[in-house]
Image (cartoon, rainbow, N blue to C red; front, side, top):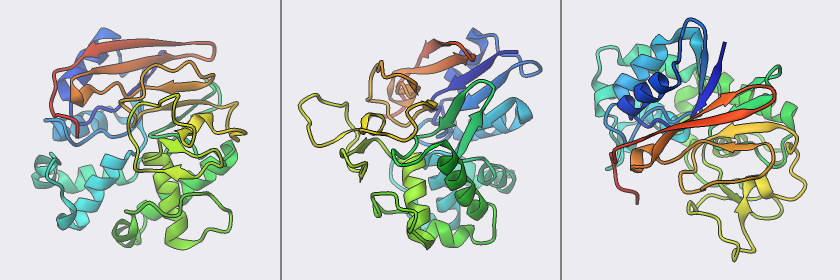
Length: 276
């Protein structure tokens, strides 16, 4: 059995199928992990959702910011943005089944045997593995409950920007959401900087990638994540970024996971949307 992790698909169905063909993925024997953002910006979000859902237990996908945005737009249509490509999903005859399936996906996955954690954007620098798993479970409970509509109404926003065990209510859930789905940069104290998205610069002494925050609590955890298409190659220990900009004309990348190694495989992608 092989286990593959795949970066942000964002509605790019054809590259996804090409990549799975390239690695000779067999859903009867193999497993595939997705870093989230199955939908939006690309042309075939509906086909991606139907395909991944149809893989059943062979696929594990965590939720990304675009996935949560789809769920929020389904409840509050005015949240729909100009560049969103979600109309086909929202108008689909199986819309309710797909959205219910999506709402029940995890925020984080951890495989103890392989020794890899999977999250869309990463793990808060203040979280050890146990705290991260508990935070994911808190948010999953809300998403799968009758309170999910109230959550989607309050989900958007950049505050609070630092973890505290004293956080409560919607502010606590918003911080958890932002860490799992939107985080890229932090300052040296681990405070989130959510307005930046470009490639890191050695000249920037104030902000750094979340995984370079001093004394990060989860340094020993091997973390697979997406979300950051401009990040570029990194050599940081235990850090495995997989968003290689498929929807922007980059590539879609898979990582073959084992307890001892990780091998990358990619396919080139046709640009579906311009950055910005």
